[in-house]
Image 1 (cartoon, rainbow, N blue to C red):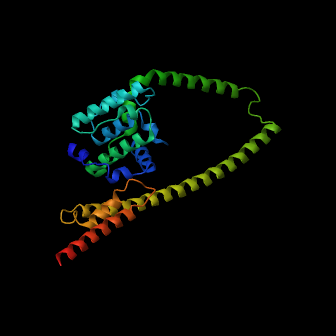
Image 2 (cartoon, rainbow, N blue to C red):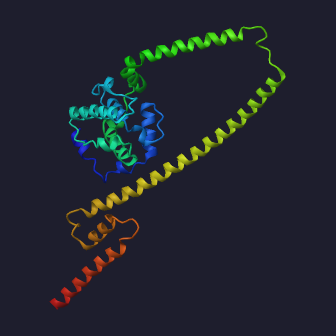
Image 3 (cartoon, rainbow, N blue to C red):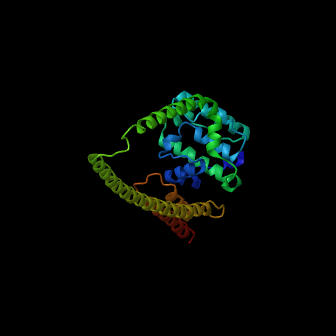
Length: 280
């Protein structure tokens, strides 16, 4: 397992997975409804992902899903670090950055985590794993009193409402009230149509994002193949391979490295011509 984690380098395709795909993966796997990467900054999500991947290794009763302060978040990461130590996973946790809720730092860690989870058993989730039950089991004792109070309050409200509706003439609806109800129904129809329109729009945008991510992954795979080819011992010292790597490893995205690559090839060609002329 340590070897698998160690093979996930910064040029791995894992770090090109978009935040929407990461959020979809988390929400679908753990039955959550996160809308932003920063919502996973507490470390609880990461702990449960490891609990799903390696059942029984994570002490879920120590994981605080309600962590809001940095202190509570750090406790979650301590649990996660202990799990990594048990599994001999050599992964450094930038806890100070993660608990700040920085989107990029948390995205990179979740990208790594997804790649790791996918590498275990082919990413196949245990069918018997119940994420909601596992979360509730950890906080069951902590939340038991609050649940009791909520149930009691709900019971009182139900009794009050029943008593109010049991009075004489309480089921009669006056004319003005009927008009208000009709207007509310009309507003409800409009709201439903607006929700449907927005849902269709979101679906269309999601499909567009998925298409773009697949296209990005396709071209990244091509570039990775070229990089591996250029690193071949028989080719890496050739001028053409050096020129190609000049383009691949260009750091400035605003300027093309093509001119530098062409100059490199030109200088090599000129040197070859000079050497040939000297030999003749």
